[in-house]
Length: 234
Length: 293
Image (tube, rainbow over all chains, first blue to last red; front, side, top):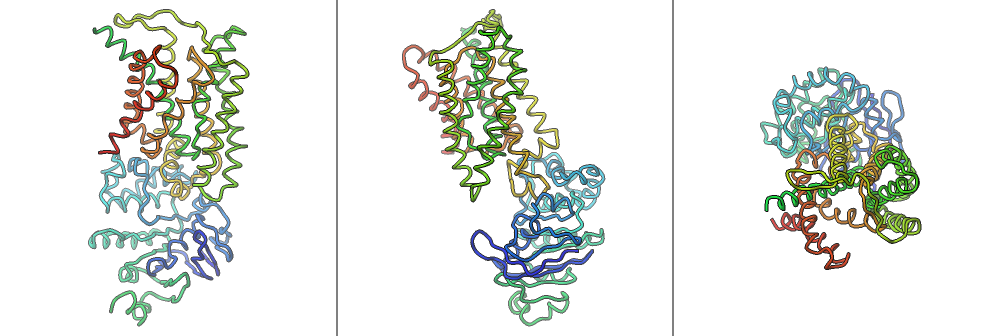
């Protein structure tokens, strides 16, 4: 479904990705793990079109998207839920969700999608008329996820979902991610919470200093000595 | 006493209307198009002069000239944005650089428009009499043209409010103003139609609003634009927030009232420059208060 081949990407003037390749199949849940500054967010931004790679290619559903602008890539079915939630703080919960469905295709089915999102996150229905800035951290994260789903994506990329959340809320969020896969959405999950990520993912990639250093089935990776030492603290 | 108070309040509301609308427009221009348009007020002046000429030379009713002026200036806004600002945007390496350049360019635009107006209409304050009949509101007399101006301000303001809050495009403009990067991830194309559209809308609104003003000189736009800036910076330039938390909108009207009320104290005694300083002080008081808190 998504094929990233050998990309080199720059963040400002510094090269952040060095020959990175990655693949996500239909309905697959793939985790991307790595320390702060490893290039995880740059990779997501390169896929969603906010950054363009200097070389290499990104293909989505057999279409080359690496030089496409971000707004066109959303139309194709790629949704990117940014780190730090990035809500439209001075708009209501409902307006934020509306914006998630901005593309023409999604706008026509907005009410139907909204109902589905409300089923997954019932709290968003209750908070519908509240300004996004008045929500609690967990609710804001749910709104960010809900907004990401409003475009009816085929592939959803989540950047640091658990960041800043209490452990019990983080667990809740991961549970929801797992259920999304059952709705035929492929997921690329970027996480610092490696234990949780490996628990729910099918496969995982480890990014270090802008390079993929390890990849494989999650189960296998959680037994890997390097992962155990560097990321799981075992 | 009550009559004086009413005079001050309603008179202040009339002036406040202009400032409120100017502030909203400026907010929209910076928030979405990222153009720090210093020449903002100049379009009010142009609108007023165009109406003046159409009325005195051709006898065209000022209210009718609104209908003519609106589309013309919409096209003008389109041309300015497509040539000047679009060029600056594509040649700037970052958004920050573009903001700086657009500020300088609009300074140039200000001088050009001012001097073209100076050459065309001369430096004297121009005025014409239209709808000057006195209207009695609760014992206080106002000229009908000022009330018409207020009505226009309210109508345009309301229409814009509904556009921003209710429509898909309006919401998207607010979203783009709050967070341009995330707006792109929603599928909003912030680079093309958007900034141009807001720029055009804004320029047109200003000219439309300037039209019913009955007195004008080539310099009158200057302060109306510039005086808005510090407060805009403070607020973060989101037109939607402007409306949703209408405190700023209200405070803009209140400032307008204050400006109006201080005017009689300085009018006649001091020159134009002193009045500009007075406006600055009154306009920035709330900002200073907010910063200190």
